[in-house]
Image (cartoon, rainbow, N blue to C red; front, side, top):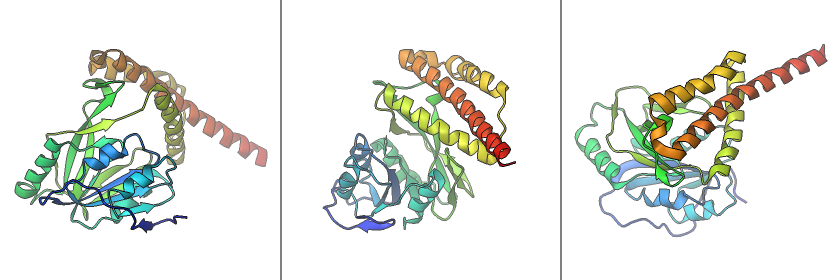
Length: 277
């Protein structure tokens, strides 16, 4: 049985041989990512330290990770922000980078990181990195998914994870932007996407309720079409063909159902309050 925070020391570490690793700690969160985790870890051989935190995978993900790092931990998932920060706190290098289990760091980005850390990082505390998503057999180049990105590489003592479902790294200091992108291999198929929408819309609604946001019919009815105008028309999501259309329809559904679940949460809360009187 693995316990929270337990580190595994078993299994060979399989990394690409190199004498030119970068003084960077990369940390990765996993949970049942058998489909993508090997691609991800294969792309991280350039880092001096690799930390992986698994939240109880049952599909072989944990066993794959054992082949790539000795710094493999198991921790029950208790929220995005806390899980991200738990993993970040396990790193030891001055510069650290978060990579998700369905992402890949291509060689072009590695070389850019190598260059900026050597030549430009003296007065910089973090780097914003763009990403490109592979969805339904093609790279998405327009709409709400592109360009997409966030701070990923930063000084360990300058950054913290903040927020709820969509927690992000907040850096105290100067942030620059890298030119090359990291790659995102998103949903396995449309069924996987629908299940994820159901899961994340619930978490988003709970976050909104906890923050005190009130449900309104206006948001329920008009935020979805606003996203259509913004992402499908103005940001030209239509240029991604049928995948682009599926993206915007699923996005509108996500926004609609998120507010519907907020209404449901607040309705149940009122009913419990009335029953207690």
